Length: 341
Image 1 (cartoon, rainbow, N blue to C red):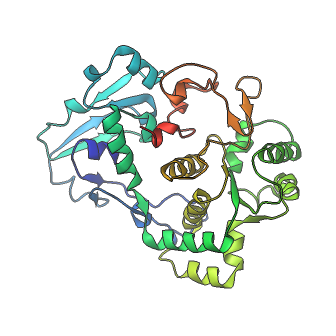
Image 2: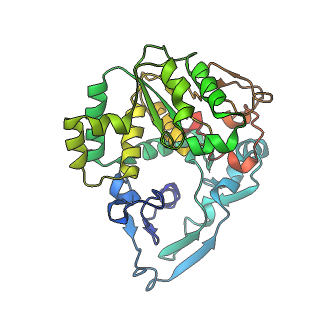
Image 3: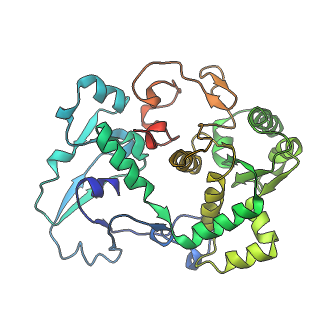
């Protein structure tokens, strides 16, 4: 969407598939991204290929977004050090100037768009402010926002954590009980034990023993899906939404977590990344980038759920030395550049 905006074009999506909700999901209830979000530019659904089949298009095989940088207006506008620091190992540059004056009706870009805009678009400070305003205008449909606000009003004062259990299992070692205890101890450094704690997760049913130490440490905990479906009024409102599915529940959970007092997420989670970004958009919100666990305790300094800067550089991703491939940096967490120009 950001690329279409920078090139002054409409966005044509040729494969508008439902959001993936797992192998057992009801396909009739699975929304597409356009079912869930309002977009600030025109988005054309060309899933049947009607448009691409009759209009001349320029196929562009761009490298994956996590391996490249989109530069506007062009690389000549920036010095070598700026490009190197921003790229952080990514050497492929896509220049806006090479495409902005193309006369073809459609630019057919073939790439994997798996990256956060904060570390993909290399632009000057003024343009970044415009980019941030543009991205802030990508918002969920009013019905989902309104319902999430109803849930927030019912909860009143609360904090939230997010644990993507599948990622956490794959990226950490040790027995399940210890890891749950470790997370509870970490979270207790930033959230009071008597707080109403909303636990956002995809894996409680898979590993209930994992969450035991967290539940015991925070007696006033709740799981949002159970809270919504267990309340007669909220359940009725939820069932009256245009769609009901795990994807919709995840969106509602995200919208609620954005409005929590303190939020602590999980590294390697795009769910957490979006919550951190949206909290950064809001005034008067605790917008620290907090994480429930440090998978690299011997390498990356970590205190009170925050990874500490230990390096120098103009961009926030230069200043924390995670032992991960350079191509992970654009997606495995969000950065302050997503809301600060």
